[in-house]
Structure formats: C-alpha cells, structure tokens
Image (cartoon, rainbow, N blue to C red; front, side, top):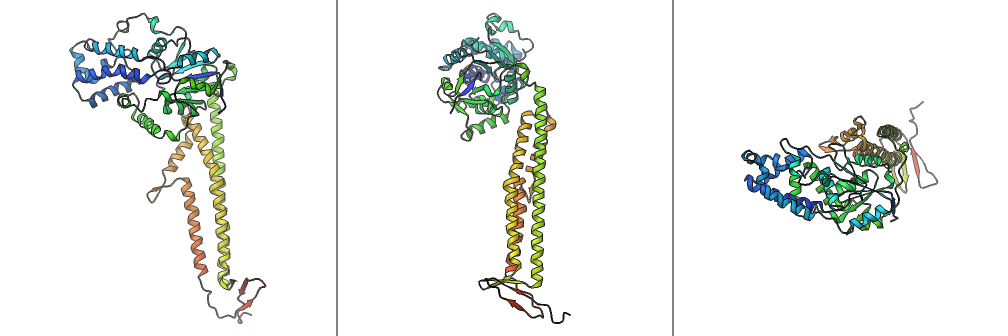
Length: 490
C-alpha cells in the first residue's frame, strides 16, 4: 500500500492511546460493588438504575453517580452519601491513576509526528474534565494541538466542586493544548461532526488520517466521512468478559449496543483501510506525515455553502433516478408492444392454417413467431435488468448517501429514503418484494405465458376445413403449406 500523505492526524483517545476500559473498570468496579452491598438490591436492579443515570447524562463516567442513582435514594436520606462511600471512592481513585498510562510507543510516535509539523487533533466522547485530566497525567498537554470533547455535565444541586477537588484548578486544566467542545448531544459515530472538526482546524479531508479502536464508532465513521481510516486493533477491549458490565450500565442505547455487537461479530466483512495490530508505531507504515499547511479560509466551504451544494447534488441525483425509471417503463412498454405484435402475427398464421416443416417435422408456422417473441422478451429483460435497473439503483444509492450525510440538517431531502423504505415494504401474497423482485416477476411471468403458448401451439393440430390443400416444396429442408382459397370463393 502506498503511504498516505497526512498533515492532520485525528486520534481517538480511549483505547487508542491508553487503555480506557482498564481505567473505567478499575475506577467503576469498587463503587459498583459498594452500591450493590449498601443498597441490598439485585444486580439487575442496580445495573438498570446506573444505566438510567448514565443515559440521562450521556456518559458512562459520571462523578456524581451515587448522588443521583435511585438505588441509593434511601441511603442518601440517612446522611452524607459520600461519607458512606469514602473508602470505596479512595480505592477507585487509586485504581484509576494506577491504570492510567499510555500504550507502548504512543508517546514516542506522537512526538515524532509532532516534530514533522503535522497537526494532531484528539476527538473523544469522554467529557472535557476527564479527557483533560488524562492528557495532563500522561504528558500530552502540548503534544496534541486541539482536543475536541463534549462539555462537562452539570453539577448536581447541593454539591460543591471546590470541596471535591484537593488541588488548584490549574492542575486540572490544559495549559498548552487548545480545548474545544463538540455540539451538545452529538456523539460518535457522526461523520458530520468529524467533518466540522476538520473544517474548524483549517484542514482538508483528503489530507487527514483518523485512528480509533472501535470499528463501529471510529473506523466506520471515518469511512463515511471519506477520511483515511486506521483501526487501532491493539486497543480492542470489546471481547473481554468484563466488557459485558460496561454494556449493562453504559449510556449507549440498546440499539447502539446491539449494533456494536453485530459489527464485531461481522467484523470479517468490514475491512479497515489500515490496521495497527500490535502498537501505535505501526502507523508510519501507512502514513507519510508532513508539515501542516492551513487551508485559506476563503477556500473552505461554510456549512451553509456545503448544504446548498448537497441540495443541488441531491436534486440532480433525483433527476437521474427519474430519467432511468422513465427509461425502464419505456423498455417494458416497448417489450409488450413488440411481443404483442408477434403474438398477433402468430394468431393470424394459425387462423390461416399455415404450417412449417423442418427435417420431416410438421408444426404450426406460428411457433417460429412465438420463439421470436421469447427471444425479444429475453432481450428486453437483460437490457432492463442488467443495464437500466443497475444504473437506477446506483442513482438511488447515491441519493441515499447524500440523505444520510445531510438528512439531519435537511430533513426535507429524505424523499429517496422514504420511497425506498415504502418500496421495500411492498408485499405480494405475504412475501416482501422489492423493486428487483417485482421486475423479475414481470418478466418471468411473461416468459411463462410465452412458454405455455409455444408448447400449446406446437402440439396443436391444424383446424380441418372443407378446402383443398396445396403444398409448395422448397429447395431447403423447410416447406411451408399454404391453404388455397375455397372453390366456392368467387
């Protein structure tokens, strides 16, 4: 593989540069076990109660979990809940800091990339406070140029943040790395947010590379945004047995969990462009890092301009769909006309009693016309199915991609998705039939009718009439028998 020229490296943090799951599990488990012991509730009830808080706060790392979880409501009424959990909180913090360390080769590799002049951008789902704290602890404040993360959650009423912190605010804040926030409520995978990040730092997608551990949230998102995707396979933690606990209490919805599980199980069908199997340093085999060249602001499309271009492209794509759909209808109408004319001619020859003979076999002459009708029907089928229908589906898929990327900002352009959804739901005798199957039913039904006509005609006997028959023998093996006019004809 030819190495990709990259002047902007976008990296996920969790399980990409350090083992986030180890950090999360070591800090969460002591609190989790203490909640079960203190509340006296079942594991299932505790997990549901935790999950409700995490989904409401849109994070699986919530410092004030014990202040809000329903399972501890009675305990909070009896006194200071943090005092009761003081020992488990201390164990949690110690375990967290012990687990917080960079993967091997990450620091050295990022410094080499930094020294090449490449801009390094971090994009994470973890809240701003946790992300900044970790970057400072592992010595990456200043190595990473910009950090994009969600804003911190609100502080519960009655809780003083000053009492929770034992060090000055400067200790927790980044001093060199610029901290920016992603839109409220927007989480991975969202290719639109990723493209907005690239635009905001003055870069271009074709000069970026994205590294992340999650096929679902990172690699697939980068692929959708047309960015060079790199899978940090060494950071996968989804297959650990303990990961089931995260799924049980995560802020992810059930649909998110099931989709991630399905993608993991079907991972063999999704091939990342590049894979880091053992360490982060393998990235140099795929990327040639160069000095960042900021794009002039007047050459960067604004979001409004991009949406306008997307609408224009969508309109043109819909026009192309209508064009090919019209061509398919014309092909089918013409097929019916041509085949109908041949069948009418067959009927005329049968009424006249015309027959043909090939190598001693006498049969109605109309069978030749029916055979021609079958060949013509087959030609129209292959032209329709494997030419115009393929082009139509390509246009439909392209429109669907535009609608997927810009549908959130432009809900009115979801016509193609709506039509496709309705088309997929069409049922015939209890079976779902999409557009391709309906096309096949149309042509296969025509084939069946023509085949029945051919067989019936081939074995049919000429109608006996009170007329004399005259045979005209041809020089070739083929002879045509024509019935002369009746003697009574004037």
